[in-house]
Image (cartoon, rainbow, N blue to C red):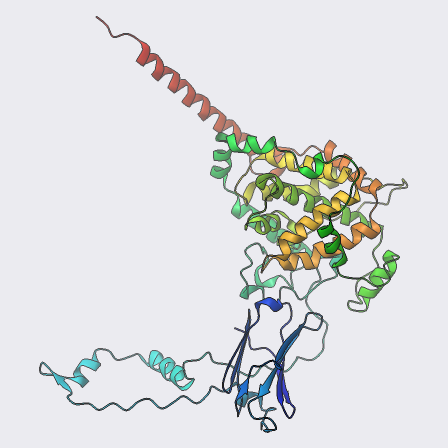
Length: 488
């Protein structure tokens, strides 16, 4: 557990504790009060303070969390109004464990049993020096978690953290990722400091480690359920007639992060430059890369929708995050070095760059989820293309579906913060139906070759098919032997 930075203040009636807990959810905060002791826990932070006098939790008490600053403020009522709490500025003293009550006295009536003294019995139960030291430390700490006053902030210096997320505008969300149950993170505890090329290398290494040829061959041989999935049609694709957002969707759109000066893309990101001055104003290349990233998001969404038939499960957030390289490895697709803006009205997408953008999605769909089929991956690509062809409103509806699933997960909600929220704003304000249709048509025409996956798919399929035919021939021979009449 991490002891957060904190400070205490008081008035005649209250004591207020302000602690710095960035990137947490307010609903996960646990606060307990026991006479002079205050305990606050929100993963990965833990704070236990012992005041000189009793505090109580009543109607005047409150707890407020500001996600913008990352500060949690807890206000408690003094049991005796007007009582002065000394030494609230001595943080180490507040962190010290509460004095334990003296143990009950025990009178030894007899120290022998069956001729063996109590000392002789205890000799066989003696602790090692290390165990004895740990035991004494725990007893001195009243069997509570030890705490140390957090160190002051280091000197201001250029950060080694590498930005990530939507147009590389985010950082700080994975500083304590090692203390969370993030099972999709391919970068480990180095997520904040990994360079772009290192992220790609780690992603590829992770995909190769997760690749299981036996799983793929088993799904290829027994594909009855997968073939049923291939016949399903996404309701957003099948929908005809005039488009209209539902009331709940309109409310979700209104709750999206409000961006000042949304009348232009330039003004929108000028606001972000105040926070991250090293970020360049987005140009046509970055806009082009956003469309490529959107294609990978819709691929993952299409896979999750098709395998659950638009009925999300507790695993849906994990599935979408695992299949999206921009989430799990913070590694979105990039335009090729020789890419140049098109003179045409709509964006143009070459087969080479689309193949490079979607290749990680194909690989991850064959290495991570339950159903691993190249035909299923192909179907997800065409689903994503058809969703793009229906325009901004349909794409926005898909992103809201993704956001709803991610926001309700206690760990993977961060990917909504660094990707989906901004994409929702961008789709409404700055994308065009012409560009989306161009991307959709290019994805429909795209041909992903199995050998580009680099896992010998065709050889595995051929070997599996040969085994199936051999088993079929063997079964036919067995049936012939059973039908052949016995000799007279």
